[in-house]
Length: 430
View 1 (cartoon, rainbow, N blue to C red):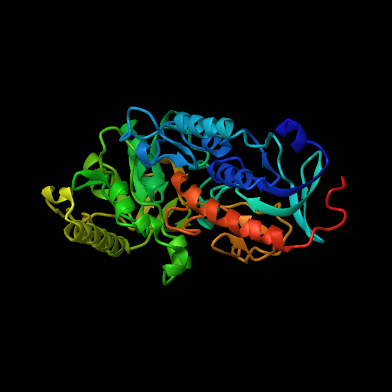
View 2 (cartoon, helix red, strand yellow; view 1 turned 120 degrees about the vertical axis):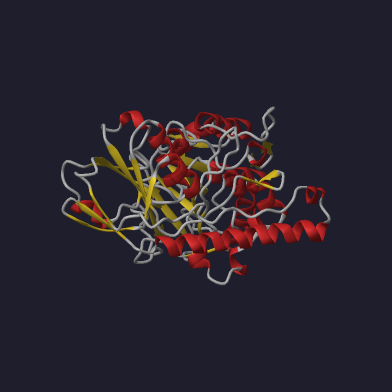
């Protein structure tokens, strides 16, 4: 039977997977290998968030050689380059076609609620009974906008990184970018290059070089085992899951993008945005301390790489070890900015995202809106999640991290299905 037609019939299925991005498709691959009947519901098209929720110039932070899904890897002629968003979309779409995943595109799930022996999954037109449900709808659905945004003057144009497409869409005048992770530094760099004055507000961040000792930094994160570090081997997994994405940019010149390179260009760097009082924006005085902490952590990472090279006698020993200039924090960074006097017309919130579980009618979300789970096994029988930061491994939220997590969770899910009783009504339409 045609997968699309099967998905749009009214009835029941062993597993419903919600989301046809890399995580949902990886799970579909392993469920198919185990001959488990399932359907993948996708509110838009395959790879919808990559297709519609990224800015125009964005490129992957991981090199092409790292792009892989179960049984599907990059095979082009530029392994050290970085995919554009259209290329990522095509990579994932090609995987969906190759695996013949049972996808029901254009089908938004409006609620998931528990019933005896499974879950009731509701879409605008159909209802399904599923013995198990996999949440693969992504971790970056809703922008986290600080409460201070409501205190900004009405004549200040505000938008999130989710809504930003390019500098040409911004009003004339200066721009305040709030957030110092990968998104924040990339947007500050691009907007400043368009000719606009840019101020960047920075809190705790992760500094990381693009290349080190002859290889991309992701190579070292891979071979040293850092990307495979497991969630149950970390002292404070809650903190680890909330660490900002590293200050990286994917570019053909493999350049390092950090606060030093931005200040050399002319970007003004201030501390974390603390409050808004009328037309005055107040910044934390902790910039020097958070930069020292980022420099310290960078040094520890490079020490670990050097130790691995020394221990393994790798050929990379021919590339000398080096340390980077500490982050320059001059005495001129300001604790307050008058938006009108500095002609700042736009504020871009690069302050992160959170998942959206508003449609999940199962008591598994804590007071902060976070899903309660143990390495992707949610605290409700038969409910699973994929694609969250450091979910089972440090690489869980990377595209290539979907394979190992989906493999292990599919094993757990299979054991769950084998062990639970099947309700008598399960194969009946409702």
